[in-house]
Length: 418
Image 1 (cartoon, helix red, strand yellow):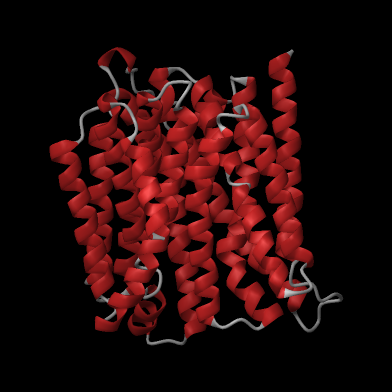
Image 2 (cartoon, rainbow, N blue to C red):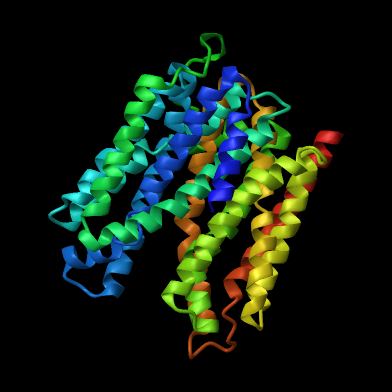
């Protein structure tokens, strides 16, 4: 891990002197923000059980509704924040997002009842634009030559945060269920202070545009974005991939426990392994491939890898197959970096915030729909009354969705060529 983190840091430090401080801060924002978000996961079930005085099944149901509340607010407000960042700059929107997450963690830390948890999650969803605004900042400071590599660093930072966060959360949980939330609040507030004192605005005044309520909503943002033929195909392609990738976070533990009788510890190790692979993929692999392939070739290659990985998960008869399947699947994550770069390069400079906000809203929509549908398919395929026993059903569905994503992508490329 130390070797990969050192390489990760080296990639950042090798950027030009002018952009280095901005890019470094954006990376730090994503790492700290994601770690703060991830460290609450291990103790949230226990906190819900304490507040509800209920069993784990009831706590899980409330946990699902908390996720729904957050995603619903993201779906509604992400385009608003994206539009505001195009009008007033990235800095104020990013700072408000970091402060909002800190307030959310305080609500969770001192919640006397479950209503406070929903209030905190709603606040986090309303202000939760840190990743979208960070992506817009990357577009502001990048050129056609280094945009893909910069997005790779941001995605690697996201993966690194999700490795660090759960480990810290699980450790801090020994000192009480409220401790990780207080630490998460402190981390986010530290992020806010770093941004307030050290982060310069990345969007020049000349590239700003007027705020328009007609475009600052999910449907309005989508209607505006689909004016660009390539962007239209890419957005729907990205939505299908996002829907498919939720199979990992929502089904993986159930799948491996049901089919291969894995322990909770082994499931945790496997997810940490996924995080390590993500960092390698987004730093080293993306860096290597950008010198040899175009963004379009990387996107197609990545989708083919993901389809292969999903099918290996679905039909794995021996657990050792999961290791190469994970490597192939995570290698396929280069498609996301490539598609981010293509979409950002196809949009005007003064609409990058709207683009990232619109994408955040649409990805929030997949977060609303994918987990319940994929877990339901798993429940149906493993139930005693099911006509067929097939634990890999969610991954077969994910593979099919990714295949249709590839078709949409190729169709968009052909339209642009014509």
